[in-house]
Image (cartoon, rainbow, N blue to C red; front, side, top):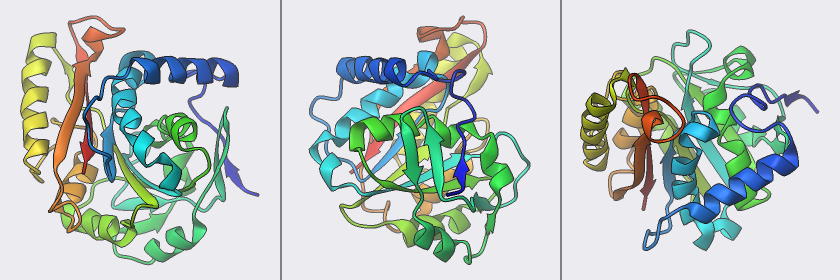
Length: 260
């Protein structure tokens, strides 16, 4: 079986399986999402776990009510490592993490690879952290599932929306968009910018820029999709690196949302 190896284990999260499980368990225990509805989609950050893991855990903790029903995860994240026009899916059969291998849904990947704006590129996936850092959370919360990973480069919202709608399923499918918010502003400036972006996301604004969120193209596609139109976007947590493990001079913003 052809498998993508973990690229950022030991950097963004623990390379040791036992330590990784313990860290995720601790974050999930501290997650505060009382009263949240069971989501059909999540928006979660993708920095190192010491920076944004607790915010991500607040979104993942809302899956408990339907975790046993989810058998497929559709995961969108921005391209950080390669210049990419459109979207890229991989040719491999599985993605590896210290917690084991996640099988890919090759049938779904083959189907969308023929749609406009989608190419097959293992290079786009090889070193990309935005998708990988979500996998240990998903493996912990869901157990066994298949994965459809999509790296999003420069791409029109409607092109991404067509892929979102093509992959949206029923109770068996969870859609996840991986994104951080603003980058490298002062603490107070970032708070204001990120609050505005969070308000816009809850209003399902589909005109975000890369200054608002590194995953803007994926977010705009999600908000332009037919399936998101009738859903509520709920903010479950927001912070920045100055609140967690970084200084306050130049911070990165993080938000976690559920769509239900």
